[in-house]
Image 1 (spheres, rainbow, N blue to C red):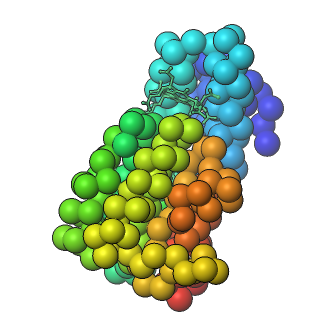
Image 2 (image 1 turned 135 degrees about the vertical axis):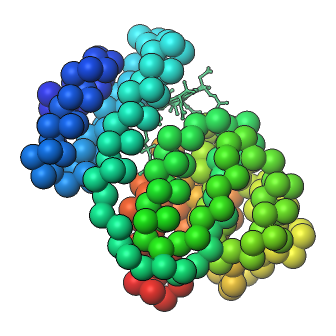
Image 3 (image 1 turned 45 degrees about the vertical axis):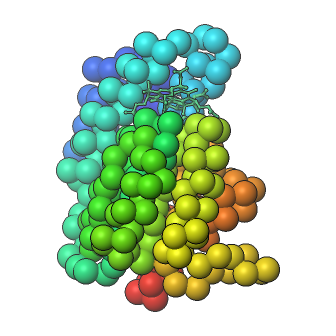
Length: 218
Ligand code: B12
């Protein structure tokens, strides 16, 4: 971990943070380590916002910094050169507009040979139904950062169940066929249980690993 880099992020020193990210990548550091620090820094920015030390404009500014650094990371990540592993329908759920994490998920799945259909942000459950109907994905991936997003995720899963597009969990919490994966900053196993998702991950690379396991292509 680079404490200086995390500090530049936390203090919202845009130029310094971007320069440091560039230098680390130019020196051959693993983009995943830079991503870990990015998450660490943004966690602290979030805490400062929650403690009324930072305000909405700070969050917005943080968003711009993250977006630029995440662009740099994407340029450095190697293409896995596999293709057509499976299809993912992805979106940030209703009432939530956080998209930087989702975009990284898109990028990582795409890089690893998945066909990803990105529905964007603030996606209503009906829109997921239409997309699942149209694209017949093996996995539906729901992103959400707000506590309020948990209810939107649950509603989406219920709507897909009601439409017969995914199986209802059996008494052991197991669902055959198409799977639901959820992710985002605040997701825990309790949330997964509440939403009735098959799995959750709090970062994109682990999401890819889990998806490959599900599809038996690990
Ligand atoms: C930047 C930011 C914003 C930006 C977002 C810009 C954008 N284009 O996305 C803006 C300014 C728009 C914003 C707005 C708001 N925000 Co905000 N935001 C953040 C902040 C600081 C960083 C989020 C981020 O992008 N992190 C960087 C990414 C790369 O890191 P990451 O999350 O770890 O990414 C990985 C995972 O999320 C995972 N992942 C994501 N989706 C999925 C899906 C799947 C399937 C998988 C497997 C993995 C996965 O993969 C990613 C890559 O590895 C967080 C703080 C935090 N700790 O996250 C608050 C935070 C999420 N925001 C918060 C709040 C309260 C808000 C607002 C309600 C503020 C307000 N009063 O208006 C609004 C909500 C607007 C809305 N309706 O959605 C709270 C949420 C609290 C809660 N529990 O509900 C947080 C936690 C801050 C805090 N501590 O209070 N925000």
